[in-house]
Image (tube, rainbow, N blue to C red):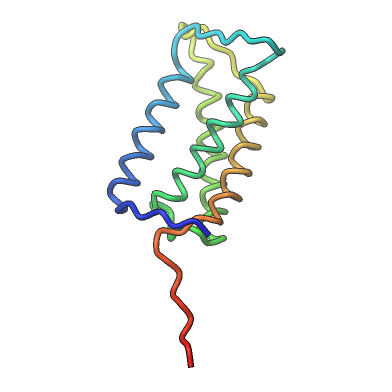
Length: 131
């Protein structure tokens, strides 16, 4: 297990700042990402939403980090947010595109991020009592 020692307030602020950056980046007008491989944006979707899930889990906004209930709840919230994010990219004038492949990459990142967040705690594990 990994213990995150930062206070909850700082973890919440970090998540909010990251979420705002993600929203801004995904809605930046006519943004195009070119790379040496076809569709590098899918890897970015996967990584960014994985990190988004980890940060939401660690923030403690949905429950105590490191337990299954919090990770499942985070996954559900993430799926809803990913759908909102993709749908709002279709606003005329943004010059952006939304696609099911982008959403599936987001969902894959969320799944991995939520699974990895199960390894994180914000409180040290209690030491076993010795006899």
